[in-house]
Length: 208
Ligand code: ATP
Ligand code: MG
Image (cartoon, rainbow, N blue to C red):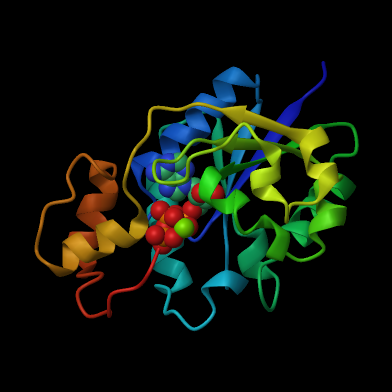
């Protein structure tokens, strides 16, 4: 039987319900056999910002994925030296699974910077893309809004409306820093982990 697999890349600093819901909805709509949550080691676009160490982010991602039969956590990008580039990851999956259809899931905010990704034009042709709605990053029907995007991308893109969760990992980090609750924003195990390890207390505010 033909298999579809999807990769959802992120810093997951920390993972939250916005990520998980997007992945879950995509799985259902596109009949995905699994969704691989791919932890970015050093996201190039977050250069200069401090990101929580890999071990903590990975542990939280594993906790969040633990009770799902379709989510899998991958350390492929952590294990690769240097920056994490999506094109390298997709190429790796193509090599390993030439018979499978590969999807890449991203929020609509990522679409606005896609043209800056490594070899964006080539990447556009290498897999299918699922772009999920994210509040604050409204998708216009008119493609001329995205003049910077490679033309090839439009051939391989699917848009998916999900109930908009208007929050980000940045918001969660800020809430923890301010001593505010994050219950209902992240899975209880992740909330507990953050508490236990005293995470996000000392870092400076960052931009989303
Ligand atoms: P940060 O504030 O640190 O940038 P983030 O919440 O944007 O964190 P990322 O790890 O940067 O999370 O995002 C990983 C992927 O998940 C991206 O493709 C992003 O667009 C998507 N995503 C993040 N939050 C949401 C959300 N609330 N709804 C839909 N997609 C989301
Ligand atoms: Mg982000």
